[in-house]
Amino acid sequence: QKGADASAEMRKIRITLTSTNVKAVENVSAELLRNAKMESLEVKGPVRMPTKTLRVTTRKSPCGNGTVTWDNYEMRIHKRLIDLHTSSEVLRQILNINIETGVQVDVTIHQA
Image 1 (tube, rainbow, N blue to C red):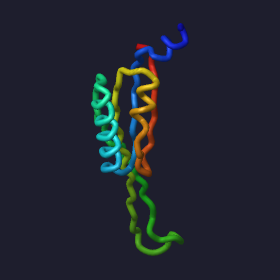
Image 2: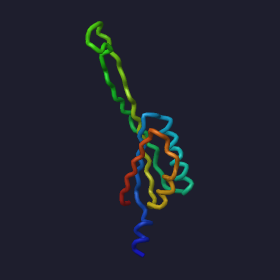
Image 3: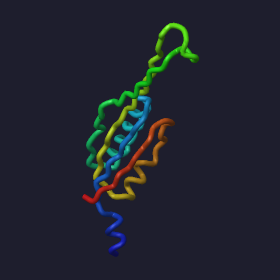
Image 4: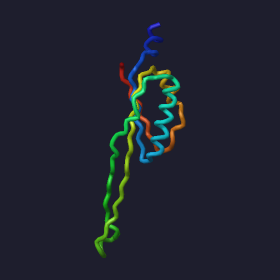
């Protein structure tokens, strides 16, 4: 009895979605929210975190001679947070979705 009660215990769950593609992150977060609302769960999010921009500046000339010209490259990392209050079994049902390539999903479970 105690094992069954502990597994059905409500927990605070934070899902973090990270990707360089904005549309992929938005699609996955929308699908997660749709599944959570079908289960009638308490949902907070998606919280849009500030975009991290990684920049690299390099010389165009491979040998170092010639005119001083530079190339600038940047990669933008987009992040979304979704908070749920649910049990572990329901979480497995919600996360049973098609996650697009390039989207990293991190699930953190806290006691509520």
